Every structure is written in C-alpha cells, then in structure tokens.
Image 1 (tube, rainbow, N blue to C red):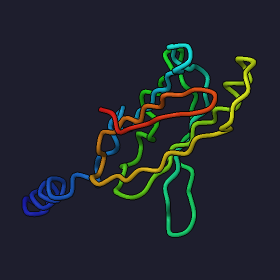
Image 2: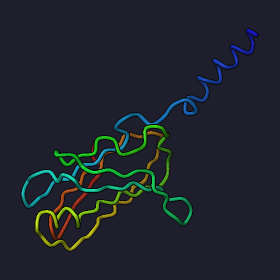
Image 3: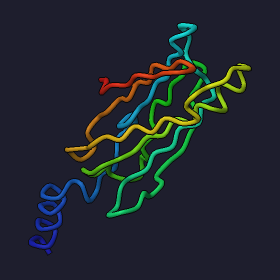
Length: 136
C-alpha cells in the first residue's frame, strides 16, 4: 500500500498538466477605438484552434465596458501549443455607433508555443483600419 501511495504521489508531480487547467487570464483581449480614444464595449470575440484543415471553436464572449475580455480561454482546459484564431466581430459594434466599417470582422491568427502561455491580444480599431500586436 505504501508503494502504491508513493507511485500516485510521484505520478502527480511527474505529470502536473494532467491535473491542471488554464489559469484565469491565460488569454485576454482588449479593443481600443483609435478614432475616439475610448474602449470598445459589447464586441463579440470568438476563439478557435486549428486542427488539421479545420477550425474548432473553443470560446466566445463580449468585451466589457473597458473593452476587455480578461479571460477568453476556457479555464477547465489546458491551452496547448498550436495555431489559434481570435475573431473580433466589429460590424455589430460600428452599427451600434451608427458608423460604417470596411472590416465586418477581424481575424487574428497566432501561435502558442508553451502550454498555458499567458497571452494578451490588443486591437486598435478604426472604421477603415486596425492594428494588433502581442501584448503582455
């Protein structure tokens, strides 16, 4: 019995990812409207992961009043290395502002290199352009 308990404890330390999940805030996003200098609230954002030749949806949410989603990646899963896509659904936002927009949505593809790597994807937005980068 002592050997079995020791093996169970050893296996828990040897394979911590089997017992963990993504911490809150593993993937966050932020949208700032460059035309107004204000955050962009109520923008739908989706997260997908590339699996061979298709995309699998992992999560979706709306930005808060500060234009942020503080934790988009599901906390009950590990964020594994791979190619992911965050899509900002901007058309609804601009229509709510009674403005036209050239980009109905903005997909941002990125690569995760480490399990549960903490990532932040900011979007600087205007009606006819945008900019993004790897934030911290």
